Image (cartoon, rainbow, N blue to C red):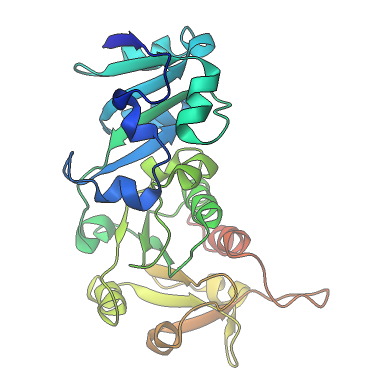
Length: 269
């Protein structure tokens, strides 16, 4: 690694960290496939263990000693930019409380078939736009035994900085990929031999505890967007519509909370 001290926020070498949105990071042409930003020592360690490669690392001066074990684990030559706290905040547009960021190469995207080949319980996130909810759903998936996560074409990016942070780095732990757009998404689940269970409020829906008592061998648990829930197309194509029984005059849970409840009920021995 090469340690480079930088005192000016407009230094061109910090371009990867300068107010770039998730969309901008994904669309840059160099490197191929784009970048994502990993924030905090714990998240970066998990990304490295998953085989992800950093393009550079940005460290506040006071955190350099604490980051040495991370830097020692990096293979190959990587520039480590050491900056004052004020420069880090000026470049990124927010207070970098955890002291260290890494601009990471996005790994190649896998096919749906590759991701779910041996999976028995798969979480499917349809059009969830809040990055916090995506990260929380991944954390539940990792903690409660899901084998994979699939996200719809319009779902928020699991590798967005906030999603990664909320997930505590579990987006690197659980295999995931994007589904194709439109009807091909559900078709891909059925082609993989998964029983599609749509979690929704609907007439005739099966209570979760009843469904969990005799679950299919391989399940794709579908959760829908905040507010609107699953699309009509997803509900129509589901093999079973499942609902979480509610009390206290509450009709639904936050999508991340619902994922945790359903995954706990469907957990495998």
